Image (cartoon, rainbow, N blue to C red):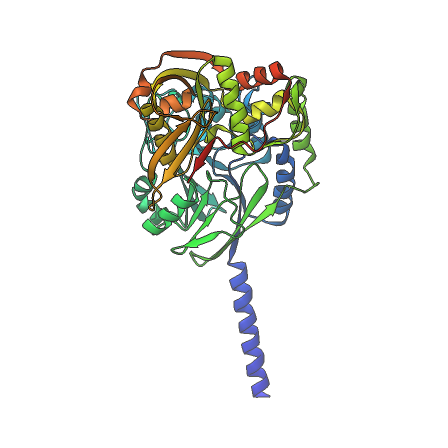
Length: 477
């Protein structure tokens, strides 16, 4: 009898301990998206799943890791550029966002207006502002308090290129200086002491996030963006989970944190695939449908006789349009500025071309010799250690050595004859002209007001039937 009683007491104590432990453990769910790029068509589906999770869970936060603008003319060419995505995110109840490089694409004044219209804060730690800045300084950091008990610190970081600026047209960055993000993050190490959970909301890209996790030991979580990487269950580096939810609102990240006794017990992350779901939030769907009701973007420009797919074929069309419009010998397009992968066979609409070339870049014309042209190609290559240009007017062969460095660059005309000398009129867009640090680019022959998308649209209207297949004007060996 005594043994049975003793066993019963132990059982009750055990159950009480378990129940106490469970009730004293806080479950936090952070829903996260990144690189939405104005793709509002999937936002009703994202909203549906957000609502579903919020109905089931007590502590839910909505994070965005940057690049909400640029990629959909419905948003980008709205009379108040970018406002549609802000209104939709407000309605969905986002709690915070970091800045992405494409947040600057409309200029600082427009960005400031969008920030003021947001019900959620933007954070960024690695920006400095001087008197020429057209936007108000952002907070580097935001502390979110859950249940008046648990504090979550969120530090925002934006990527920079080799020119120490984010990947946007430098003309939009006057008055702003950007510091190296990981070095900047280390200045906030002590913030860990005043928060229970310390999160980097990062628009640095997955490789830089990995480097940050390796070089710091104070972040608990890195929620990332910029490289459009799909991390299905997160990536663990140095006991820090790194997440990223693809791009274009095709995925919703779901991070689950269990917090007990003043410490994180566990963190897990998963993705919900939104791309094929037919479930949606009715209110957000109504908003999106109203924005999409724009007949002008459905204007037919011409006809694609076959699928125009891949950067080389699309880039060939774009650069041919440049050369045809500007009457130059050679035209270059940076691959990063080619924003879609496919124009399918059939009618080509205005919306498709605006999605292909969303930045509104204009063209700059130079007189360059062969040596300078090769230097331009070389500079572009070393930005990402891969070819970064498409071209019209010449063909290019980039020969690499055993160390994968450029050994030599050859230029050929369309008759396959090598070009060794001469001076040529060369057109590039103003993003390349302003961000490429080549001295000869500071001396253009002429700056034009011709917009890249307009040139392509007029080219298609002029020739009516377009056929670009199996074109490879730049080879790397």
